[in-house]
Image (spheres, rainbow, N blue to C red):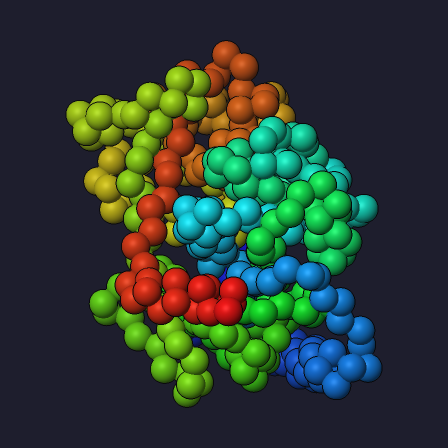
Length: 356
């Protein structure tokens, strides 16, 4: 289903059936776009209520449905702020977790993990697990999650993970991430295109981050908004069981089966190919999917059938696999994504300005 939708949105040329379906969806996209414009206007003029927390609020979000690298950028910002001596809390919906989208709960109090990946959702759990000192809360209402954090800690700033459309909580800084390969998708809102809101929503942005950028890609949407360019590359490969780094010889001489349940699995698989490793098979899965012992055993059997020695996966998938991998842990390799942000001083100066 995901591949069919992606093809419909981004195909250079469509079959007559695809073109007919696309044309049928366009009126619904226009209705959706109008609703989102009215919603944003309602918040802007006060018809719809915005709550405010007593600490600065920063949002990292996107305009286009699918993966744009929000979690790694959120992690980069959180690490920077913690490195300056500030106490940081991340507020997330907890999408995909059994406790997500409900009453607010703490995933981490900055000292210990309080929920599992299955309960919290993969992204909040990954952030809480990998960033020492970070407070993470989930809930349908980010305001309620922020109030919960304030009851048990004194954060200097709250970060909304995937918060650009969560207008019920007033924020002091909005960073919007656009995939440099197709920044505005095909130009249409859902369902005929991937835009969550019309392009005019970018007027709310404080900063644009072009992710998956290279020197061969450019974007000029006509907005007078500061922009940073973010390159990403897989840079570390560790065994799930021992966290031992794989050396170059092992990477080049072993055979791998790729597994990814993220917004853009193909981007991950292409990153593996770019490292010149032997990727002998791959399986893309729905974003935020959860693994069972039986599912992982089935993937392991598929890997064996194509001659793979290891399953290789993302950090986001690995935190969920760890809970059910059992004896298969020694066959799983975790690939970590490294970011290089050009013009990073623009971001850091704007972050400091939030604190006055």
